[in-house]
Length: 300
Ligand SMILES: Nc1ncnc2c1ncn2[C@@H]1O[C@H](COP(=O)(O)OP(=O)(O)OP(=O)(O)O)[C@@H](O)[C@H]1O
Image (cartoon, rainbow, N blue to C red; front, side, top):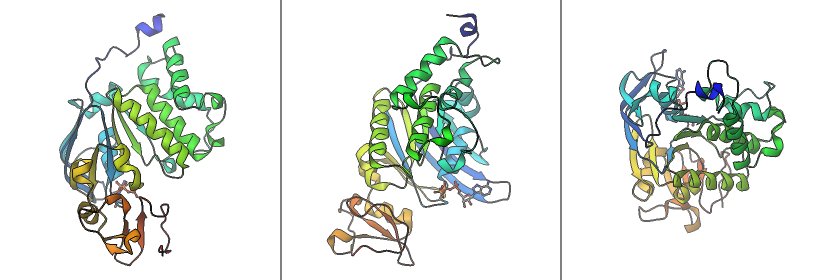
């Protein structure tokens, strides 16, 4: 171990992963309250889907968990700690939405992943042997070692997602937030990411995944939080991910096109539905229905 390792901040004890959101309200400076009285709690070894329409407050919840916005009421605790302390201890890692990243910024893949180690380094930010090894391992784990010397902006959407996932792995947070990780990627990459999330769950990590790909939610998420500016329902997937709850969440009518477009009953498989909004537009396809679309084509 080198002298710089001795000065690193890796000594924080490993705590059991947990997220507690209690009566959380977030009001933005313009006075708009994006989330009101939201409560849910999650423990270690969990993959939880955060599901809601556009603007329902998913990113706002993430920002509150990362400490980017302060609650106007209520609180968030991570592993039992206040957010600032948990972020300082590298407990929480974040995989951003693609749109939130400036892809023109010239930076190598391996540098992006090394950023996950910054919180573990001293103020000089000179990578130790451990930091380099963690970066190597993380790139290997997401299958991106061969791309380490490439500019991030040159990669495909799915490859970029993998790199940001590698950054989160290198950071070694027990809690990982993934903001729409499956948008714009192929099914193979989606399956690879889901496999990785399952591995991480098996090692006690807690993952909160905001997603519009509802069809696969019951396959890999053991918990679900349904959101529409507050928590409408939260708990085990088999209890919460029901047609009735999804109808409340999406504010439309659920139909099963496999069954001739009839409205869904609550004992139907919630995966095989399409949400129809008030203006008769299909909002989300999932299950065995056509792939996710947002246009006006209704399936026959
Ligand atoms: N900085 C801000 N100032 C004011 N209002 C904001 C701000 N950021 C978000 N909002 C508003 O808060 C609401 C929730 O936004 P948020 O980004 O959390 O939704 P979301 O569920 O993540 O949406 P999407 O699925 O489209 O990503 C929206 O009505 C949005 O316009």
